[in-house]
Length: 84
Image (tube, rainbow, N blue to C red):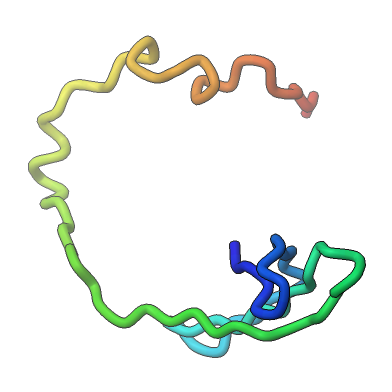
């Protein structure tokens, strides 16, 4: 989240667009009703810190991760079920 450059209040992202694989432009609006300015930000990937790609052959030998290893929120509990 970006802070308003004028009054430092929180802002909301109104829309965004990808300009390339590494650059995104976003349009923001200030949440302060007495300010309300809109402004544009640019986000860009400048460095890749880690590019670890596992060897697919090594993944085949791993045992499956048990469902109980994940928090309930990651297991789909409480989500809507859509009949197919």
